[in-house]
Length: 493
Image 1 (tube, rainbow, N blue to C red):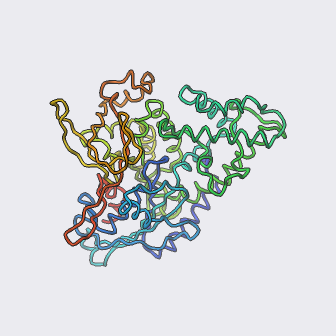
Image 2: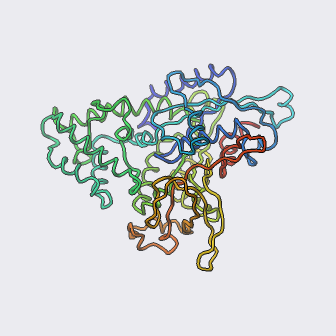
């Protein structure tokens, strides 16, 4: 981690941890990072987790709840006054009342949930109820991509970004940027107009690559896609140049100006985010939307694998102890989750988990070597479909029933957002390597028969059931209770 943090950074992290412990008033605090690339479902996961704990959801595999030891769970004022609060109430309204998915995260936010519980130990139970502060940190997936920049020089990042933009599946999207790149000389004089033209063309290319039909993931810098209050500032007015990774920029050149702004971006935008938030986590859940990449094809799958490897190299895994939890936090449990498991039949969940394990293999090995526990799991924080069996030409097929989001299309039919359908999405192959094959083009040629039939729709949130007394039941899910048990359960013993 020496290339990311300095001694000064580590000292500041330790001070922040000590201050947080003191302000906690003696109540243990567990900081949970909810991480994932854009549209992986971070907001939905946090909302569903809190809703099920606060309102008593269906959590049979969350031991503290199923055994009756969970006495209370309620929201508290968050400890970091300078960080916006996660808008839990608005997100619940979207899911339950409007039946729409909440808007993607646009800024960092936090939420504190305080859990009271009876200890599983008779001796501890005599001392009274236990308490745990669960601090949940949410931030835009685009920002996550920036962490890898802390390890890369401007010239190294430029060479990588330009090389990626010239790959077959990206070249057409980057044509405007390539044209702007050809009109400038890196060793020519500083030129604000050229810098702005390049930055704008590069941003348009990144946005096109992120679109659903391409679903590419290697798209840093993240603030180019979600600038917030940095929009139009010099910190975002830079772009990669066509230079070798060992290029040394001459004084007062365009390359020198671009490098200076890149370094300012890393120092004043990326590093504070890493130091103040990412480096203070105890547990990590990594949400991965593999279905969007599967829809887009093998190029998107390989791109997702590369993006995850870049991001996960910035984690701080290790064994936790009472001292490390105070001075320098280490992530001792990591849960990799394949989200939207309700979009495939349960008989395919094992194949979905196998595919996710393939995507995250290198990161899992590294984390395990450092002493962290690692688990892989298919999950739907909010279940939007139910399973049925349909008859097609005399053959019984496992299918999903749900309401597609307005605008979703299948076989030329566009859905209105109100019509419920039954859909057979296809079977995931047992061998995940099939889905990475370079010969499997957009038309799915070169794939196995099973892989070629894959097609995943986006469904609206479900209409919640009500009790006879008119009480709205909790949000349905798949394996959310298992995720909570793994991430929090050992702290409630």
